[in-house]
Length: 151
Image 1 (cartoon, one colour):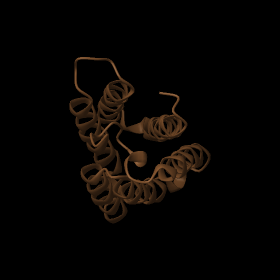
Image 2 (tube, one colour; image 1 turned 120 degrees about the vertical axis):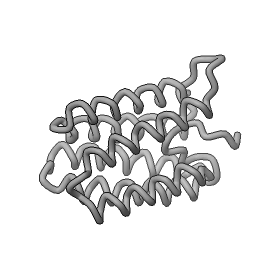
Image 3 (cartoon, one colour; image 1 turned 180 degrees about the vertical axis):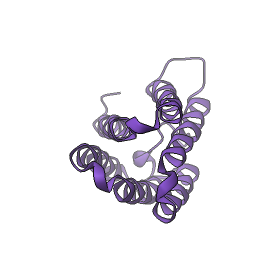
Image 4 (spheres, one colour; image 1 turned 30 degrees about the vertical axis):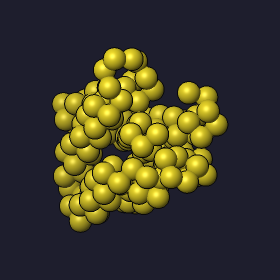
C-alpha cells in the first residue's frame, strides 16, 4: 500500500510510527483545547512533527508539506488562521484524490472532513482553536485505528 491514505499517513513505512503519531496528534489536540494562548507554537510544532512522522511512515509529499507549513507557521504566526486553513484544504484534497472516488473509504471521508474544516476556518477564523483541536484528535484516532487494523 503505497498510496496516501490519510493526511498523516504514519503507518506506510514503519508501522509503530502510526501509533506514536496518532498518540501525539491526540495529545496536541487536547493541549490546544487546554492552552489556546500558545496555539501558534503548538500548531507549528505539531505540523513539523507530523511532517517528520509522515516522511518516516512513507508519505513523502504530505511530510514535506507538513514540514513547510509548520516552519511557516512558526515564522509568521499572525497569519496562522489562513495558513492552517490552506493546509487543511490542500491535505484534504490530496487525501481525497489519493483515496479515489469509486468506494467510500476512511481516506475519502477524512479528506472531505479536512476540506470542510479548512473552509470553516477561512470563513470563521475566530474558532480556529476548536477546529484545529478537533482535526488533530480525528487524525490521531484514525492513525491509531489504522495501526490496530480497525479500518
